[in-house]
Length: 484
Image 1 (cartoon, helix red, strand yellow):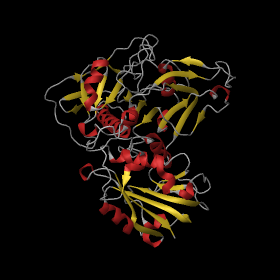
Image 2 (tube, one colour):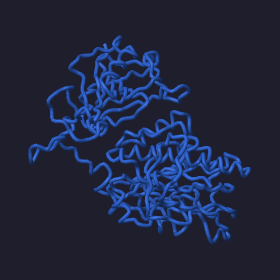
Image 3 (cartoon, rainbow, N blue to C red):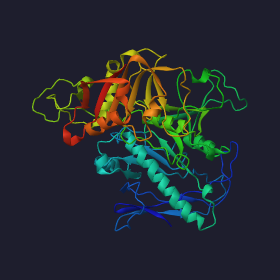
Image 4 (spheres, helix red, strand yellow):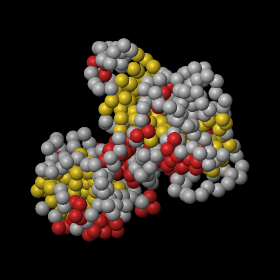
């Protein structure tokens, strides 16, 4: 039986085989499936997702998976997809007990927490499985948690495929889905009338998470989709007459095919909008997304936890009763004497762009006809500014941009796929703004030269900035320019 070694703890992994798909059954077909038989209050840390081998366990706890001789399925239904919930700062207020939502059926629910919060979650949720991020991620955002969940899940999928191949099971028959669910999901609804495909005004029925997931898992040819999800509830959803399925963005509650999305990653540096960024990457990679429109999810507003508890404060606390630090102070000129802040560079950059992008891209404000062009990454640059996302990878499926003139260009940590010839395909307004973001000043200058940006853009030394970190905290640097 394969196992994943996690520091001093190992997790025995056995994934369920898919049963034959039905159109909308609530009960799976009978066969022997592995299930997680025991939960431990102990926690585990993630291994290096890129390591090819894993060391043997020295001591600790093993969560065992056993093969059950199932009773008739009407007495013991099950779910095949493990559920991962990234959570931080919500050990008291997070909605982490899924027993009633699952109607008591066997399922695997894993809380993904930061190392410094492990003891708190163990205290409040002693019967839950915890996967603990390495200490280097203590100040990281939710993007890091999603990145690690996906990498670990794919690693375990490969282990299980190799094991079952020895038993003459085809690799494509191993169930490839996981569920990523926020810690504030509270209610699920069905908006389809039982005897009609149409939805009448106000006609909705509460249903369990178990029923929603079983319906999705048993949808025919579901393994051909990279991501599946459901709608988010709003007051007008019952009056909207929509098709049963849509291809659109999915968030909050996602059933992810870790096999098809093997080469598409979450940005582990992100603190917000990481799901929007990932949706765009999946969509432009030519993969299929599917939203089940007859299901909806209601979320509870939790005022604590998440990024809400992240306080930006000065690096050196020399004065008391300091005035609040505005997002405009999150960046500064390099080598300036501005107060340096004790916060991650990527967090400061995201918050600055959300609040102050109207200064960077003045021609894009309230101008939907001339959006800002963003290459390979989506960043929230305020609701006043429209963004056009383009994937630079070969064979990507991008929006048609012929005839479109952009009011700005955003290059965020661009890699070798972005070349000067690629950028010359796009057209910009005179006076449009360029913003190039890099990890350090050296790579910033190398990017300007490699992409031949000085041919069409004018730069000034005073337009170079950095996030307001000290050098040991590795600030991000960015340079702005004007199109000529």
